[in-house]
Amino acid sequence: MSKTTLDTTKKSNNTIIVLGSGPIRIGQGIEFDYASVQCVRALKNLGYQVAIINNNPETVSTDFDTADRLYFEPLTGQDVMNVINTEKPLGVVAAFGGQTAINLTKYLDQQGVPILGTSADSIDLAEDRERFEELCDRLGIKRPKGVTVFTEAESLEAAARITYPVLLRPSYVLGGQNMIIANTPADVKEYMAIILRQKIENPVLIDKYMEGIELEVDGICDGEDVLIPGIMQHIERTGIHSGDSIAVYPSWSIDEEMKAKIVRQSTDLALALGTKGIVNIQYLIWQNDLYIIEANPRSSRTVPYISKVTGIPMVELATRAMMGEHLRDMGYGTGLYRTPNYFAVKVPVFSFEKLMDVDTALGPEMKSTGEVLGIAPTREEALFKGMIGAGIKMIHPSKEKDAPNGVLFSVKKMDLPELPGLAKHFHDLGFTLYGTSGNADTIERSSIPVNHVAKVHENADENIITLLDSGKIAYVISTSAKGRNPDSESVKFRRHAVERDIECLTALDTAMALAECLESGLTEDDICLVDITKI
Image (cartoon, rainbow, N blue to C red; front, side):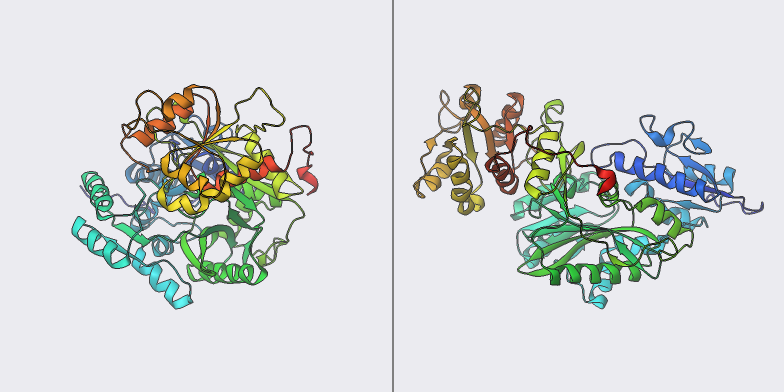
C-alpha cells in the first residue's frame, strides 16, 4: 500500500486543525481538553477556521459549538491524514493534545503536513535521549546520567554502570506509564520482561535516580523571548510523578541565585529546542546543584493551574506565538514573571476506592485522577485549603475527642533515619503512635512512646490489619515495598486502609506537610476567602 500524502493540488484554505488527546485515561487528563479548547478559541479570535480531531464525548473540545468542525475520529496517523486530505489545512497544531498528539508529529511531518509551532524535528530533539543529551552538554545543563537500551542484557549492564537506584521508563510516553525505580538487578529483570512482552518499539531509558527537590516551569517561547510565569516546587522529593505531587507556587525554599539559574537554563533550552509556543521543563536540585529531568515541548498538567493563579493566558499566548506573534507585541516581557503576594497549592485527588487491587503507594507512574487548588496569603493556609479540598481528613486529637487518634507507621529501611522527626510531630499533636517492629524500635530509640504492632505473617490474630479494623487509626504512613503484585502483604495493607476509609500517606514529605497543617491549628472556620480576580 502506498503511503498517504497530503494532497496539495488545491490551494490551502484558512483552516487549522487542532489535535485533541483522545480518550482520557489516568496520566492524560482534562488539562489537555482545557488547552485544546483555549487554543481553538485563540485561533478563532485570530480569524482562522478551526477543525478539531478528538474522539472523546466527555470533553468540552467535542462540544458541537467549540470548533467550526469536529471530527470524532481516532487519533491515528491514517485517520488524521484522512481528515487532513479533506480539510486541506494551513497546518496542524499538536502541542495541546498531550503525548498522543505529539507522537503523531513525526508521521505527519513525513507526509508533508505543516506542524504549526514547534517543529517535528524539535519535538524529536526533546524526546530522543542521545540528541537531548548532546544539546544539554552544549548548553552546559547538567542532567542525571542515563542511557538508552533495547534488551535485558543492555539494561543490566547500564544499571550496574550508572549504579543503583535507577529510573527505568519507555520513551515517548505520558503519565509515567510503565516507569519504575529499580534498586536491584532483579527489579531490572522483572521490568524488562514486562516491557519486552509489550513489544514497545522505542528504546527504554535508564537514568541515575537522584532523590532531591523537584521543580517545574511552564514557559512560552516566540523564538526570541521566553516568558516563565512561575517556578513551582513540589512538596514530595523526586521519585513521585509530578501529577501525583503537591505543587506549590511560588517556590518557597529556593534562593535567588538558584531561581536565576533556572530561568537562564530554561530560556537557553527553549530557544535551542526551537520552541514556538509552549514548553514544560522539570528540574531537580541535588547537592545544591541544578539538574534537568526532562523537557516537553507541549502543554502540561500544570498549565491550567499556573494560568489561573498568575493571570497569564498561557495557551492564548502560546497559540499566538505559534502563528508568528511576539511576546513583546502581546504586552509581555521575557524572563520570570512577578512574584505574587500569595501562595497557590495544587493537591492531587485519587480514586483508589474505585480502582480495585491498585497499590496506593505513589511512584514514577501517575495514579491521580484529578486535582484541587488552594490559594491563601500563607503557604500553610494554602496547603490546608488544598488538602481539605482533595478530601484529606484533618483530624486533631485535642479538638475531636471522638475521632480516631492513632497514627500507624510502616516505612521502608531507607526512610527510618527520618522517622523519629516525623513521629515527634504527630506525638506532640496528641496522637497515639503505632509501628511495625523496625519502625517502633527506631521511634523508641528517640524516647518517643510507641505501640508495637505485628505484621500479618508474624501474628495471624493481632496485627496491622486487625488494628485498622479496630477504628483506632486516623492515619497510615506506609512507604514499605511497592509492588506490582496485588497479593503482596504491603499492597494488601494499604488497600485495606483505603477500604476502611483511613487516610494512607505513602511519602514522608506528604506526611510532614499534613503534620504542619495540623500544627497550624487552622480549621475550616479560620481560613479566608481569596478573590482570584484581584490577585
